[in-house]
Length: 419
Image (cartoon, rainbow, N blue to C red; front, side, top):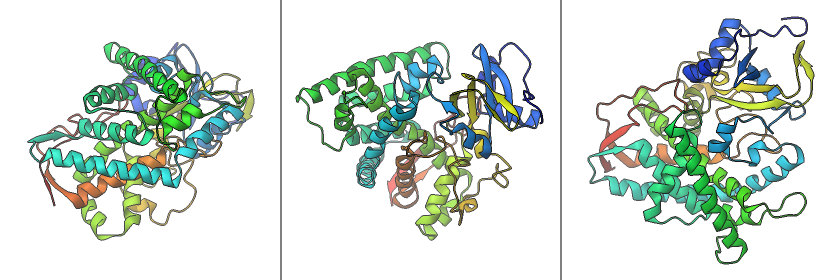
C-alpha cells in the first residue's frame, strides 16, 4: 500500500450483522481477503478501522495515538465494563486508577488468591465424589465466584452463591447476544452495582470492616486525582471489575480440560517435567483457544501511519484472536504446541494478547492476567496430580461465532475420585 488514504475498504452500508455472524473470525477473514493487516469498514453505523498483528498492536496501545473514552459500545458498557470504570479512562486519570488495581495484584495479593482458590477447589472436589456427573463450566464459575468474593472481601453466603455466580457470569456471557440474554446481563449489572454500592457505603460508614488488603476496602477508600473518594456507584463498577474477570477464568478452565483431552500426550509431559512446562502449556492454551475477540479504542487526534490516515474519533478494533493465530508471529499457529514458548523469553506484550496487550503500568494490559495464569496452574495441578476422572460421551466442539466461546457440552466429567 502506498499513498495516503489507500487503506483497503469493505464496501457496504454496515457490517455489524457480519461481525455477529462471523464472531472471532470477522477480522481475520478480511485480513486474509485484503492481504492486509488493516482495513476500513462500517460497524454500528459508523466508520471503523480493524487491524491485527504485532505492529498494529504496538500502534493500538500507543496512548498518544488512541484513547479508550467513548470506544466501548453502549451494550458493552451496560454489561461487561460498566460506566466510568478503568477501561474507559485515559491519561493521568487512567494511570492513577490503574495503580489502585496494580496494588491489589502484588505478589502477596496473588499468593493469597492462590491459597483461597486451591481451598475452594478442594472443597468442591470433595462434594463431587458422590455425584454421577459434573458440568465443569458451571462448577468452575461457582468455585471462582467464591474465590473472588473471599479474596475481594465481598460478603457471600452459601444461599447467595448461585445468584451471584449467575449475575457475574451474565456480564461476560451477554455483551454479544441479543434479546433476553442481553437484557439479563444489563439487569444483572444494575442489581449488582446497587448491592455492592451499598457495601461501599457501609465500609465508609464503619459498619463493614473488610481486610485492609481486600479489594472492597482498597477501592472503597481510593481517592481520585482531586483527592475525592470515588462515587459509590463507580467504586461498585471497579469492584465488579475485580470479580467478573476472575469468574470469566472459567472459560479458560474449560479449554484447559479440553486441551488435556484433545492432546493426551500433554498429561505425561506435565507430570514428568518441571514447572516451566506448566507455564508453557498454560500460555499455549491462552494463545490457542478463543477468549476475547478484539479490543476497542478511538483515534485521539489525526495522524498518519505507514502512509495511512487515521482520523480523530474513528472507532478502531484490534484483532486479539487473529493476532494470537498470526502466521507471521507464530509458526503453524493452528497447531497446539506448548514447546513454541520454550526459551521464548523475548517480549510477548504485543504478540501474545488474549487479554489485551501493551504494558501493565500506565498501559491497558489487564493486570488480572497474573491471577488468570495462577488460577489455571491450580486447576492443572488438580486435573493432573490430585484427581482421577472419566469423560463421558458429549459434544466438545466449540464455535468461533459465539462470543465468548466454550465447548458446547460445557465439559462434563464423571467417576471423580482423589488419587
